[in-house]
Length: 564
Image (cartoon, rainbow, N blue to C red; front, side):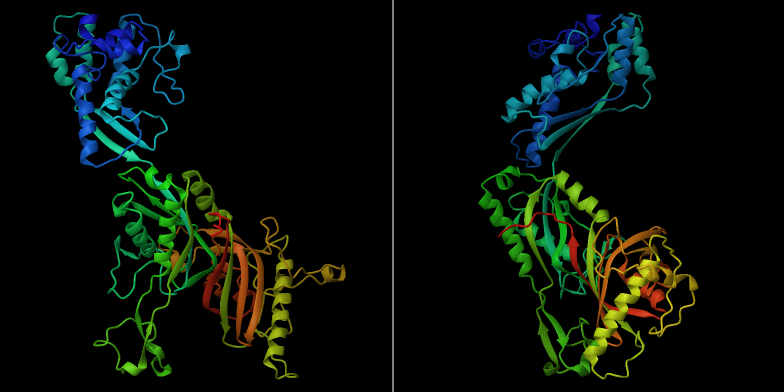
């Protein structure tokens, strides 16, 4: 038996649990050509080779580490060999390893019952040599992991199993050199450092700036250099300039994500939208910057905010009403419309701002940012227009303000009645109500207000509170046509919590609403050709257009606001 095992495997099958004996074993590479238990993974020469490979790769890739974790992947053939050996030599002990905290070793109270695995012994041998060379400790929960993988070169393991069986049964055809050729293993080493997560909030003031880069055939759209293509690029450029020198890594290793997104023509105001930057594969230890003196970390993050907030883009725009049709079109003076310099102005408006930049944990990102995408609520402000006045004009007053105040009252009362009619029995096909003041024609009789409810003293609460348990209205929205090319076709029920209108003209009004995450506000207003039910267009019986839309608040209290 012993003449087919390396020194480590001999100790293993003798049920030896003293790590010192494994470390002090004599090199038997000149005696044993091929170990049928570990395929020479635990041989002295193999351990030396893999330790040298790890050290060399660390230097070549310029990693700086304070500690390390060690992960090992072995081929399944080793499990089969374990089974064959235990069966042939009547070894009943099962192979099991239960690591304890901050240790790669099995728990001591199971030593008398179970055997060390090849992985346990490999880690004992490698960690001892690796820690001595690197002068850093092994730590199971380290943010830096060394990953080693052994893979068999041949997919057909039947010849190898035959050789092992011949060796165990001492059959003459056994050839150690042939077994060594059949059991050739390829090794690979790669490193992984846990990502750094930076969170903050952003405001977007431009109606021409997308949140993320535009892609055509998976390639980002290139601009002519006058302005950036996305908010993500502005933030990532500042991080690349200020943070990556302290934590070197590839610029492609920075991942941007946010709690939802707004359309390119929608501004994000108020407290801003939470976002997160994931910085992967830092070469130097992040502890030097992010767990060092708090003022160093704070100064760097505040500088990132300052650089982003100071970002300006010089845009040449027409400055006269006669040139309004060309407003916001980028052009060169030599190629642009026939305008004189007197007709032009230089616009250096701020595009975005960020605040509350701070380091957060992966668990916080998953809990607040990812889950918040579907559970939060949002506030919007929309400028709407109708081709004809939504309500009949009041002939007894020529005062615009008085008319608008009356329109506000009519709109709120009318919509509240409609919402009351849909509660608790909500009908997604409801199209509108009959009312003497409405200019539009509504034909669905099922949506009339229940007069009996009024007689019984039912009241309409015009100040609906935001609550998931008590939405003002449930709206059913089929995937909008404008996003159908990238979203699955579903009919999604979404909650509307609050709605209020402020008329500034008989045909123009500002809509304030609070709704559930994922609520398509534009489609709720214009109806999307009947795909959103009910919509304001269907409720009031005439087409309502949306001219501008702003996100005024993201109701997600994360990341925590910084007092400074």
